[in-house]
Length: 384
Picture: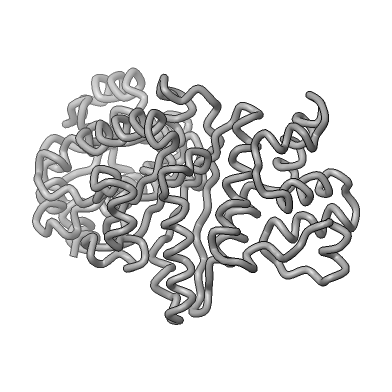
């Protein structure tokens, strides 16, 4: 019998939760009711002021930061706050930074994740409503940006040059003349780059969409070793965080044991005051036994086919109860005790890993439930 059938799993091969592999797993957010309520509240308020979410979350590896990003996306798609009158366009980005990365590198990653095809589609929809240049003037102040957006619709080599300009790449004098612009983007400073990104955000808005970046791996900013480069990245975030930006939202997640451990450019006072302290949140561990119990029970409630499991428990007279199956009552408590012995190790990733390895061991030994002996063998290794 296959593993999933052995333990009455619902349409999945294991107990693993990974929204990167299975996007529908974004709906899961076990335990953590305080964080879940905070998240919903901040999202609800953010669409009133400043108009988009601007949030930073942090925590140790395995605490659930990535799952939080995917759950936020799920929430925005299924329970969109009433104040958000447009359709949230969530865009995932795993940040990549090296020692000399600058605001240009960050800008390029953001623009490319939006994608040329999406921008062209928005421009075509605007053009269909009337004179493109006149319509763009209503939403974009910079004549260079307007000229480039018009040229982007032409396609071919000039369309490619236009896209490269928007991405912040350096164009030749001849290419600039063809686009009818006076300079390369970013030549006058970081604000130039941010203005182009916000212009695309406004273009999305007039087409009924609100861009919200879900940025992971923010610890990558620690790779930046050059002072000027770090300052340019900080300035980019500061300008995105300014109140006038109501078109480009962002939720940035990064590894840090404390807020002070986050890359300094993300949590300086000028960033924190712009975001507000309530928009900076720790996603921590599950230090108490009852927290681990709630997490595990909610996970099992979602992943186990309760009808099939109940039939199996009754038919085979298993030493298990429905709310903790596939554990026996004692092995469930035992795993939770192991997880709580060292609060630093009491992380969702470790708990799920231990559950999976215990279940695999039971399946391999043809045991219908996870017994104490299996937990005693595996849990000390996982939580050590």
